[in-house]
Image (cartoon, rainbow, N blue to C red; front, side, top):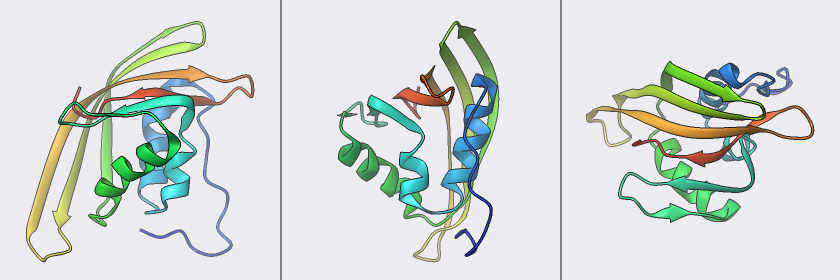
Length: 132
């Protein structure tokens, strides 16, 4: 899952519909910084237990739990609704494979996320709720 040295830069979402695929590509590198770049300043991550991560550090910790599995994520956008510079994303996702402890692992969910287009034209999460 690691990015090869000298590889092309990772993509950024220039359209709201690209956000899920760009997130998956970045997640699948296993690089926390690549995932962190998907979040707008002031973003929040709502964990499956309902706790809210509201700083870059706490969002990184929340994502690290998923990244630590060392397994790729697949995403299937179900609905994307865009109004000007804001989008509601409803995305089915799945992580499947062998966990670090050698046991089979299969987790899935439907995320309900909000993304916003920044002044740089890039779409980033403002609310990430993987267990939407």
